[in-house]
Length: 216
Image (cartoon, rainbow, N blue to C red; front, side):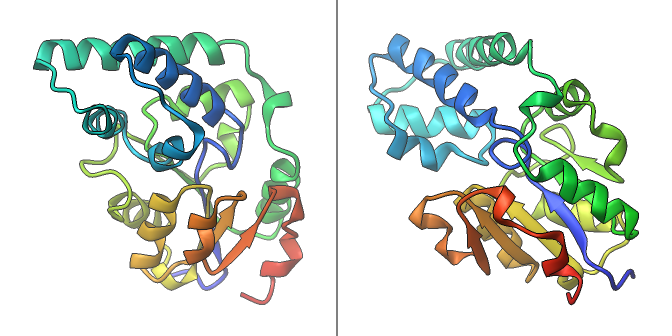
């Protein structure tokens, strides 16, 4: 097992700001359901799989749908989201992320992605950074999404990394919970109070210095 830290990144809200597109797409679906999705409730959707997100929304709205209608809305949400991200490129990478990853690769750190999004590979290709990742785990790779740690376990296995030598970058409570379950070092990124369960919290990624992890 490698002893230098392996860095495991979430995608939406950590590498690129596509999480707002998710919010907008879910709001469009909620309009159909006549439910008002606010930013506070949206925090509970971050890092959660698409079907679990819709189940949460239906619970909040007190609604029940047929399996056919449920799947129709899942497809509609994804199509709305794909349309919104169709023009993203490397300029949409969050400040500080590229420099951090480049420094990490120069110092022989493994880089992995774990995102519950099934569009993760598409987005990484649009951002032109997929070649930096030694392992990519997405919604197509797992059976149980965050806060279950399955995806982080797989990322560690694919990079031949011990759990305690992994550093997780997350903007969601679900992701932090999953990383904590494996005793990985968890770094929360954002202003949500729910991130306080992480080992460290930064409001923005560009506050993080690669050198801070050289003693890990």
